[in-house]
Length: 212
View 1 (tube, helix red, strand yellow):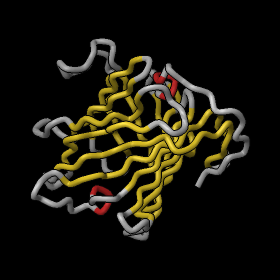
View 2 (spheres, rainbow, N blue to C red):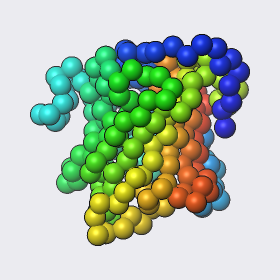
View 3 (cartoon, helix red, strand yellow):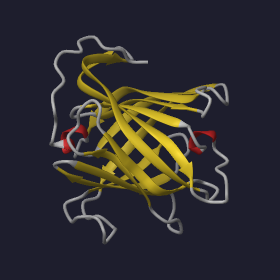
């Protein structure tokens, strides 16, 4: 798990788009799945398509199709990016509804908290609410031997299950968390999901990023 190499002074970023690359790129990830006892390397390719597909997203939003080399599942992702807001819309197939989650909001600074999702629908149709908090800032930190500058850690926590159906995935049950490290100009570089009891379910780290 990343640790601070150079905490330094904590800046305040209002241009949140700098934490999401706006070009077509491929990322090599290493995933460790504790529940399944497996490790694997895979590429996620983000192909910028241009015009978004959802009427409630600003015309200037970034629209990517995401495909990973393990599942071969194409996931549409739309990023509405303003100076102080990053909203992600995603859907796994043509028939599914788009999930909406606020990835970053407001001025990016340690101690900030916000509502990430009020009606996030899990794989089995359960609906959950997700809160987010900016927990830490690293002036420089290393992931898989690569040093990144200006890195923020954001924790997304499942606050409530707002449906009678309960999520079958441990990562969406009440109290479960997802910690994400965002590096400036790169995007997410490390992720770790924990169960409601704090057990690590899986983690992912960036090995290589390629722009095309």
